[in-house]
Structure formats: C-alpha cells, structure tokens
Length: 157
Length: 290
Image (cartoon, rainbow over all chains, first blue to last red; front, side):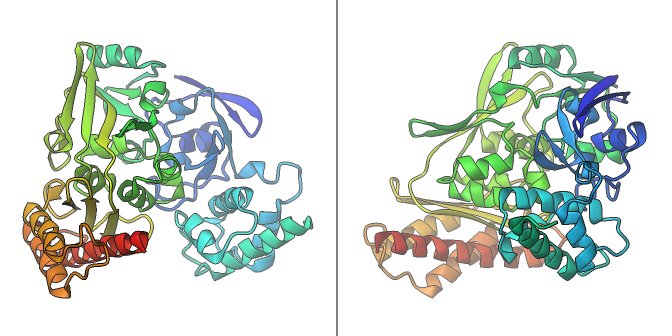
C-alpha cells in the first residue's frame, strides 16, 4: 500500500507492507538511517522520533498509521547544516561511545528541553527512562543534558 | 494482509462486522511487537487510532468516562483526581510508550500484568462494547475472563470505560526490577470510598487475571470502623491490623512461578504492597484532615 507522510518538512511516499513499522519505512524505503533498529519492541528507545510532535518509538507505529502525518527524525536536528546544541553537548561531554543509542537519546533530550528548558536531575532520569545505553553508564549523558540546557538557555551553540 | 483506516466509529464497526479477522490497532505498543517479531500475521489490521469517538476523557456528573483510545500521557494530564489510575499510568513503560499506549490496549490484550487493570478493578469500572447491532456494558470482571482472554466478540470494539468517581484516597504500586519498562511482578490497586465506608483492593500479575481480595477488603473496612477512623481520620490503626490486611491480600493471590518471579515472592510482594497501600491511604486522610 502507498503511504505518504511528511518527514522532516518534506512530503515523501513509499510502498509499504501493511504490517510494516514506521521505523522500517524510514530506514528501508526512505533512506533515513539515523533512527536505529535496536530491539523492535519499544524497550531501547534507539528509534525515538516525533510523531505529530509526540515522542514515540518508530518501531511501535505502523507505517500505514503515519499516512498523512508529520514525522521528525534525528536527521531534523542538524537540518541547518550545523549540529543541534544537544548533539554538540553529547560530543563535548563525552556522552557518545559506540553511538548506537545516541540518535534516540538526542531526540529524547531535545524533546525534554523543548518542554522543560531547565530540568531537574529527577526529571531528566524520568524523561530518558525509555532509552537504553550499554556503554556510557549514563553519567556522561546526564552531563550532556545539563550542558545542552545551560548552553540553550544562554543562547550559545 | 489488508489494512483498514476508518475515520468514524460507525465505519469502524461496519468494517469489524465485515472483517472479523481484522485485528484492531491503536497505540500499537503490544501488537507491533508481535508483528515485528513475526509472531502474528493477521489477515487484516483495523486502525482505530483516528476515531474521535474513542478519544473522550472527563467527568459526566459523578461518572468518569474514558475513551479506550486515550494514551496514558493524556490520562496523567487530564484525570489528575483519579489517583490510582494516574499512578498506574505513570508506571507504564516509558515516556515513548505512554504517548502511545492506551487503556483500550490493556483491556484488549487482557494480560494479568496490564498496569491500568487493577485501577479499573478498584473503580468497579464498566467496559462498554459496541457492534453494528448495538452496545452492551460489562463489568471489568465479566470482561476479563482469563489470561489474555476477554469477552470481546469478533464484531465488537471497546468504545468506553466508565466508573463512578470514588470519594477517598487511592493508589497503585508495583514491584519490578527497575522503575521504567517493567512488566509488573506484582501490582496493587487500592481505593477507599468514604461514601460507602468501604475499601477495594485489586492485584495484578499474581493470578490468571486481575484479582480482588474480598476478605482483605472487609477486614480493612472493619479495622477503620473499629478504630473510628472513618469519621476521625486521625484515629490510630495498629501495625498488627495493617500486617493482617497484607496477609489477607497475599492469601487471595493465585500466583505462579515464571521468568519474572516465583509464586512465593509474588505472594510476599502482595502482603507488603497491600500493607503499604493501606498505610498510605490512612496517611493521606490524616493529611487532608489536618
């Protein structure tokens, strides 16, 4: 079936199997490999995207359900050609090791900071509870969130 | 595999009648896992996420009306006075899951570990089902008939969940290995009702379906009676009585050993959770009265 959706501001379409996930459409049909396929069961958060502005796991949305809807992926963060402050903070804080969980975490962090520009430690932990990282032990990720929040508040990149 | 995407309830019910093999999908947090892993290949999928009729949420007089398609994140924001359900909603999955998962999904999947279900059980909630030939109303107890089994007919959809708003403190608590993304090893809903001076206790993940604990309920309400606590929230309730309440809850559990925990551990968890839940409710009443 033909699915047409707005991805990162652009209307795109692809033939999708009716049982296919939004994640497989993004990766296999639209060539957007930023959203990672980690667990396919909503456990790891590596495929986190915005679906009509809500943070979701793309593996748990049926591609067909996204017809006519708006999706923003991790690729939208650096759309202007320069890194998003959250991405810059991940690099500077050393929050990236193997990098597999990074896109999903960056989307989740950007989502959090849109809603709460100055989150408490508890709020950050709760907001990132759906994203798994097996390398960093999370401390550097928490550092990156604070760094991004500070920089975004001060308007520095 | 066919795919249907109705935009009204009437259209959805007609499709459901014509295609009883079609599996409904709303938030997808259960069904997509089965599709992704090839565990299920339904002949058709019926997308019910675009039906405005399933998105109702709020009070109608003393009744609470909850559309089965409302995601947990909205329940947390929009039903703050339904504390047991909100606490249950807050323990569902992760932020990503709470933005998609629905009470309709918990009812449709009918897992004994569905977090919202003990809350619905302590509300004595009714599940409203509809088909092209009409609608019917079942108590949660008659709807949840067994592990992963419910009373939904192949031509029906869940269209509403309704209950009388309780007057009194309520809670939901669960035991698992971490705070997020946990399938409960034991879950506990408790609700006090000041109007009828009664208490309701429901347990998840410790039996084939959600279990109420009638002996614990009667005992607990009686303890408040004897202490004079219904009219005087400051009245002390003994630790012995709280412990006995927990024991009666544990006795009503019918747990099994599985990958997440043993039957003995689950029974123990019921005693602890029930005792704590009653203590929290009593504290809550004391604080309100103070």
